[in-house]
Length: 434
Image (cartoon, rainbow, N blue to C red; front, top):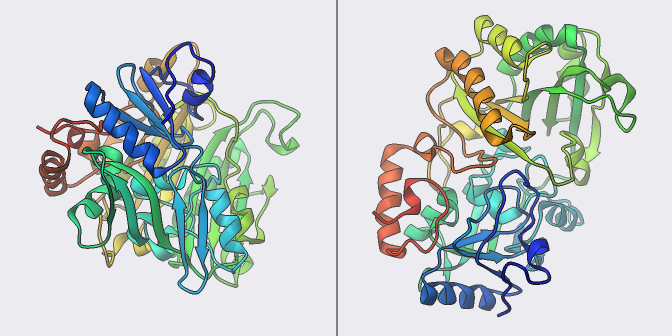
């Protein structure tokens, strides 16, 4: 087992992740190459009284200054069993690698909007992806997990195990997942992309999307994003320097053009990227940034999008707003509202929408972004449910708002059973054995 400490060659590169807004300076970093390395790292941490954090791509939360960080970025193995329609991946695998490997067999995973995100971290947080309304959460289609627990032992856990339940939603508060097996689906192509609308048509686009998505079939997963683009030549000309609305579509049916016709008629379309595409191109639907940067975000679930709420959204996050975030409204429902065959830690399945705000962190730091987001969600409070979904972009969020109270109690009980010394400190109250 190799270790790196502050000041040593390679330390800064190993600690660096996609998220740059929250500095990370763990006391010890272990660049793991195998499950055995992970187990040795956990035993080392226990011997020295160090809390443990895990990082693959660094899109999520980062380690503090007093602990041991296990970097899994070298553990990138991906195996496809085409006959069983399953994949087995190591802890550092990214969705892009799985999408490519599965695509060779006409299969697809329940991946999210970015192919650069790590498979394991995304799934342990629940996994809300491009086919969520058709197939549900990625976490609900996990077959087995290999996990190193606080005693430094490697276990294989499957449905029926308390630990299997806790990890799928409780993240890495209960151990370090070194490998995961999960279902693939017979999807080789989809109808996807976006419709972009000018600033003056943002209100019309919001209302058209609300009406249109209310009748959405389960085969359609869709969201609306409001984005203020910088005036840069690298961007498509219609978007430069404009605050636009983008309606995002991922549809598994054959009649895509017919389905979106009401949206194309709602207002003049600045740019239309909708087409039938191989699933291997699904990352182009949201076209998210691929370079590391500092950002912070939060979210709230919503029971309805009435006119008053949409007016508040435009006022506080649309064209002309003082400090507008990237704002995304996702349509939930479909398979997300139905019980899974093998459940994990729960989240709010009754809501119709989730509203997400994401902002770059500038000179004012995370505090300034937090203040701006608070103003936005205070304005939306009359229509929110008081619940969150587990999109945690840059801080230890109020996880009490994510999981039902009964699940939180069970997580606490399991924490005391599996990690009484709180070796693993991930998110919320379940991160401590209390």
